[in-house]
Length: 128
Image 1 (cartoon, rainbow, N blue to C red):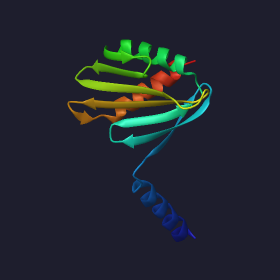
Image 2: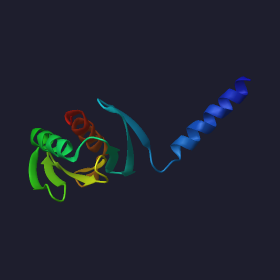
Image 3: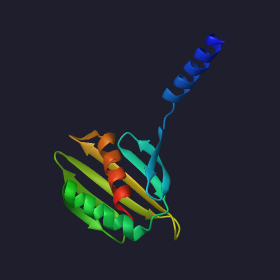
Image 4: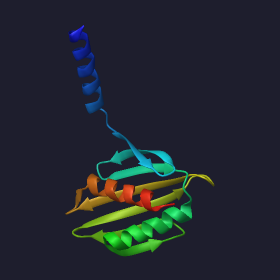
């Protein structure tokens, strides 16, 4: 019985480590939000929070974290510099009630998924 359990745990571990996309579940005030790592430097997720509240939250978090270089409310894009890196934030209105938040981060021209995830969580927490 112990061998079967160890075998199943090993298979589950190997199958999870071989996945190309790492699914993350991030909690929020309005409920759970599914976020998915798209590339080595990008994380995105869909939420039921309004476009305007996400845009305001992205602006607030961006001003706290760094210097905004480009912003376009109509296109839903923000570009900012933080320390020695860059962050690109994109908001896409999928439906009237659903908005996609996509964040890419690079530091010293290398992917920085940790920074992208940190900004993602802060924007989601800040949006009301």
